[in-house]
Image (cartoon, rainbow, N blue to C red):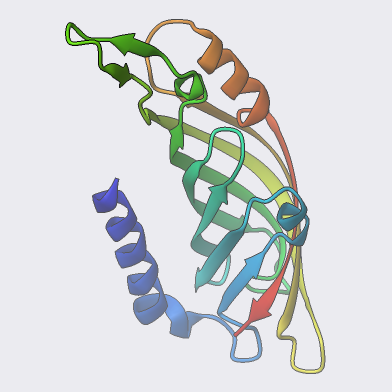
Length: 194
């Protein structure tokens, strides 16, 4: 997973240096943002998007889930902007993404105690984690406001699939599907464009 994160960062940095000059001078070339409503649900996140060409941008979003199925999720994405009058990362877009995360299993919170042969109590509670993978697609509109066009507002609607990679059917997998694997996404992000 560390190699995947390093690869995403390398592609993003390459996009900034190689293709950053191809966009119009008055349009911001990068956006850093967050979903303010996610703070209410204790899911802090940050998103970075970098324009590479007039109609194309790449980015990634990192989210830390607290509470049920605590863990970290990374969503690298690519966006295709459709407007002829505006350049990426501004305007209407289509997005495709890949998702990878590492979450704590909720079934391991059940504590089992066993007595060994000498009468000592052994706690068998473990902190098991599992890998979840997925992807999705959708569409949205990002626009800039403010005197210098540096305040970004992004609205997104899409479909996703995000499931544990473990084999078999169990309660943990079913509950994860309801809590973290919901198939529809609506995102409202605020950020800074530069």
